[in-house]
Image 1: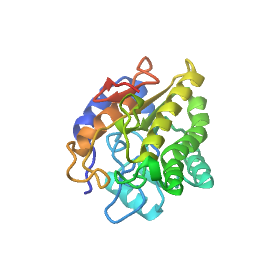
Image 2 (image 1 turned 90 degrees about the vertical axis):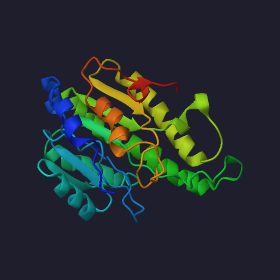
Image 3 (image 1 turned 90 degrees about the horizontal axis):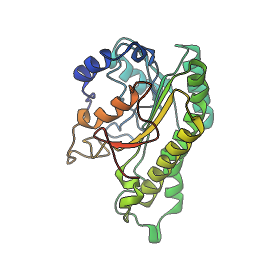
Length: 255
């Protein structure tokens, strides 16, 4: 399943942007699941940024380094477990040392939290807590650690990979841990946007849709390339681009 997200077409679109596009250096952590693994590793939205340094965060460093080799030039890996605060601090410190800046953060680490068969009326709250640790608190911790690097350079794009299952406007039952975690991630997007004010750090949420990954299964409607299109668009927004929104197919959707 080693598919990369629309590499050629998105790369060409990326390179035709204004020169600020070339300031985009690090992407942490863009993952989808490898077959037979519980951890989330494979980069998707990082792949188009061939003109920039790409940093892959991986719980297993050897796996991250394997992916970096496949991506080729300007790609590297750091060990990163978003449920471990010390790991986050070390990973961002590594990026601060080399290449020395972080301009894009894609918060895409996620677990399903028991899946569709779980219900709020009798949820395993330990499982819900574990889901929140990865899907919400992991992204929150990593964002807090990354923001000083973005502020230092006066530039940042933060893309929170959310889901329509977190929409309050269309909230249903089942998958309580996953739903709550994605709703929380959307709240984080709104709070960060309000607190960052007019700084040149744009934070947005995105629902990539049902994508053919290990988590999404091969029954999903969208290819990896299609699912990556809107996250890449948000990661490469110009300075006057949207902030504090929730998007699917490059269009705003209700919270």
